[in-house]
Length: 415
Image (cartoon, rainbow, N blue to C red; front, top):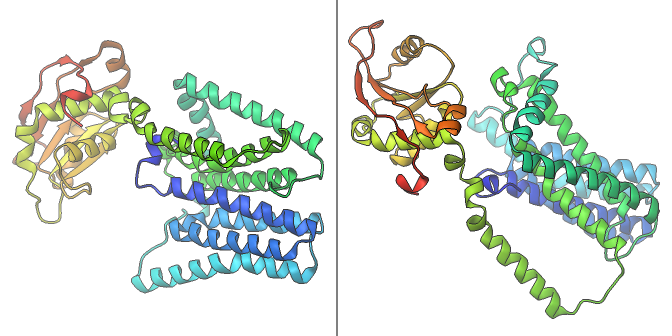
């Protein structure tokens, strides 16, 4: 998982970890069932069902992963004629019943609390069927191209995984080791789950996401990272089937595990410059530097007004991130109680009209904070804090302004 995601409150990281273990348990169950070890298969499918319940409890949309795992197991069992009919029914119940019961209870709670669903698709006539192409173009043409090291590494790993998969498929055949899941079964099940999840993401961009989110491939990297632990775990298991079997004593195993845990603990320190987006992106860093300069004037907006936000941040691309950084640095509530944002490339007069209609008292004009310009010159341009005029249509007066200065490091504003 990306450390920027792993060290947040998002459920992507735990969902990815549980999904990987669930696929592994299901593959073990299919392998045991194919050997005729019905009791062992029942145990593995039972664990897979409980893990699927955990996925549902983590996030309701994980139902897609659960359905893909259960459907993949059923498809493999039918094609390879694994187990008798009665055994298949029992294993299916073990896989499906726990998550289905958990999802039913959660749905009843949402109904009783009158809480709407997590995903609300638009009407069918408003679906954007070209969204997947737009997202793929933005992802590969902007995100990966803008990060050549990361993009190259991803392409190399994809090529190695594809080539290695072909080799394993031909060399391993139907043989297996009892201490590892069947390589072909694990590969097929991993492929089914990955394909279903990608198809679900494509549907989400078609039917749920806004045009702005589609154009920016919003959160695609975060969502795709949910498949990472599963792919790594499957690849590791398959790799072990190709290596000669060697006896490993407990001391060596313990030392390797301790080293892995230590390296994981060092990750926040070693990769600090990577996941600190507020420092990596110069426009967000410039916004934080400007907020530090404008702190005395911004403190006047700290007292929450009834039923409205007091201040808005305006920027063409990163207004939301800049608003979050403002609230964080000033220790304001993270919700929109005090700060809102406007992500639009528009004249200042249009932003002022919007802020007036929203009943805001201040407007932080960050339109001049352009990422490309800041990356080239490393100079933070002047920005202004505007106040609400007496009448709509009047120009918003400048309450405070900064002077152009070199872009400072993160240490300049702390944290």
